[in-house]
Length: 123
Image (cartoon, rainbow, N blue to C red):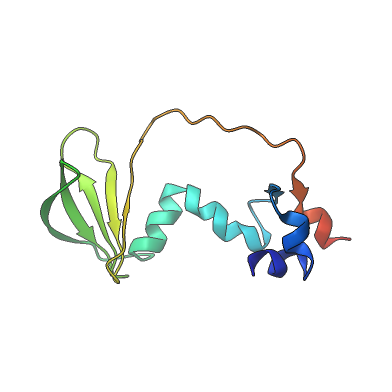
C-alpha cells in the first residue's frame, strides 16, 4: 500500500528489492526522517510540551531504569546507572520497544541504484 501511495499502481513491482531515495526535509518522507532525530522522536512519543511524571523504578534486561510518562500516555524507561540512555519505550497499548546499541558503530552499504522519488514526482 505504501509503494502504491508513493509511486502509483505499478510501484510494488518496480520498487521490489530496490532502495528509495527522497529528500528528508520535505514531502511525504519528512515524517520518516523525524524517527532518526531523537528530539523529534521523543516529542512525538511523550507530547509536544508534555507534563512529565516519574512512574517509578524498575529493571529492563538487567538494567536499572526509571520510568518517565508524558501526556501522550507513552512511558520511556531511562537507565539510572551509567549514561542515562532510553532503554525501553512502552506505548499506551502496552507495546514495548527496546532501545539498545547506543554509540555503537553501524555499517551501511550505500545502494548504487536507488529510485529517486523526487524525480518520479516530476515525471
